[in-house]
Image: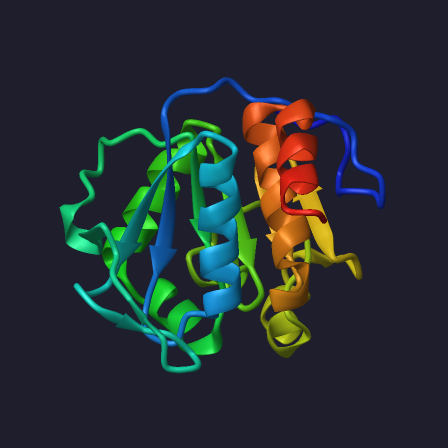
Length: 201
């Protein structure tokens, strides 16, 4: 699906994609726990299935929390179709995502299917690492990895940016907004608003 605007304005339109089944969230050592847990939590509150894939059976987050993924990277079949693929940030985790062949294969396969791809904080760097998007694609990221993106892509100073099926955000402080935006795109604006109301956001 092609989104009709190059990046997300402050009050985004409600855009809904075809619902398949499950969202895949990657995590790795050094992951930003606020980002990873928030997006999984809010999508599940919104009724979506979420599979958490880790580089190992136990993941130690950026601040020492132990997270137990549902599967490891290698157990994700390359022909498995997910509604969306999301990469929370954290510099160490982003480095892993940028250097793991199975992550690259899953991203490439899903971009060909026009699945939604969400990348948070440092993780938009995967688009540059694997040369996944056309030059000039609009996106945002944590300021610490801006230099990895702006020579190739259009860096936008917004908390959340949508460009076609790619959604990026600047960091942990945007976690709830990012998760609710993803939920709106995947399950509809009414569901996103209901979850926001339920968590008193």
